[in-house]
Image 1 (cartoon, one colour):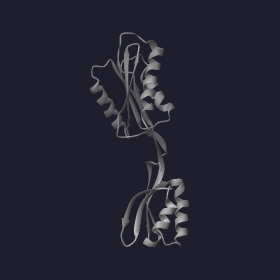
Image 2 (tube, one colour):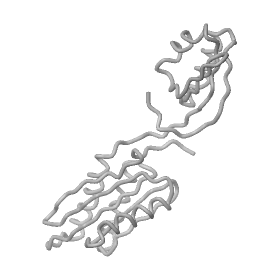
Image 3 (tube, helix red, strand yellow):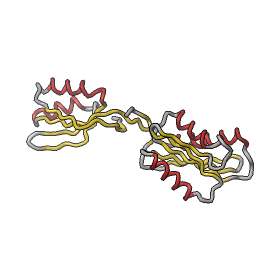
Image 4 (tube, helix red, strand yellow):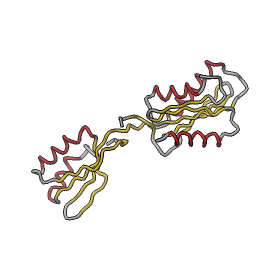
Length: 207
């Protein structure tokens, strides 16, 4: 799968704006599947069962959907979807709940309101870059440990260390840096370091 940007998972982000007495409450969540997006929409609709509208949009890999939920066609769901798309985000679902305040906004006003509400909630959601990474085990003797740790410092993530007859570090590194770092480690340990690649994966990588 290709690298992509998304929002941090595990949290439902929210933001509220008021336009001509109508309340627009935006909710955003990271979703890994369409099923998760549908569940999220259902959850918000239950929470705001008394709202005038619960409009939504989501993008999940090659699948996308949006709904006006009773607003004039093209004035709610599409602006939500377009805002997510224009920010180059993937695996994101946004629901905008509206409580009508008695003043009609017109088609243009609705588009601006739903787009603005989506932009507002996405502004409070941290963006995470999912990068192509390699997870591998690196085994070295105790006498080489400090030297190898200095070589690796700031270049990768050490997820775990096991102290046994030798020392095995479970490491995570950007795919494009893997070959270079391994070559450096092998050269500086005279070929005595043992490298065992475990998996390639997408990971919210940052060091």
